[in-house]
Amino acid sequence: MGTSLSWQTDAQLVDAVERRLEAEPHVDWRGIALKASDGVVSLSGFVHSFADKMAAEQAAAHVRGARGVANDIQVTPQDERSDPEIATDAVHALRSQATAPNVTLTVRDGFVTLDGTVELMHQRVAAEAAMRHVAGVRGVSNAILVGPGAASPEVRS
Image 1 (cartoon, rainbow, N blue to C red):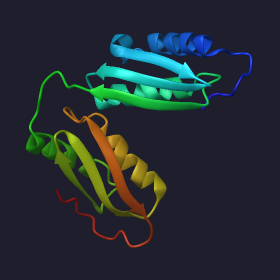
Image 2 (image 1 turned 180 degrees about the vertical axis):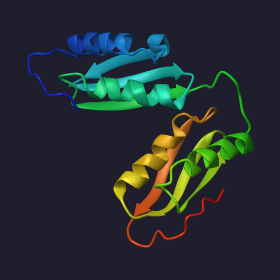
Image 3 (image 1 turned 90 degrees about the vertical axis):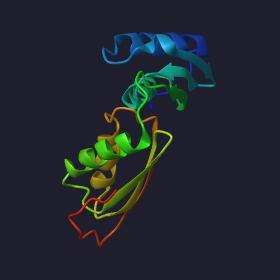
């Protein structure tokens, strides 16, 4: 989170987050509503991709004075895709991440759940990051555990 500034009002914080979102070239921020209370920024509204939702959250979190971010943005993909189509692309995205060999996934209504075990935290983070650019993904739940024992080089769907 950005450094807290006691002199910054919630209205100033909303203005600063708005400017930050406007500066993000890959986020269509016009569908995002902002509110702040005691330094906590609330994001709501609609975007067309999970990547946009996460980029908006990161942008708000890096504004000086933001003490927390509540991300209630809904993802409404421009082109609806079936869960099997999303799952197929998500599996391919995981396969491209050689760092997440022992991870499985399920897709329900565009929401991906990642499960399995990896040896290092960066593998868990990389698996989730791979889902951000899969078309049709509306959200990701990362239930991957970090610990020894990730031995299988195979990704299952």
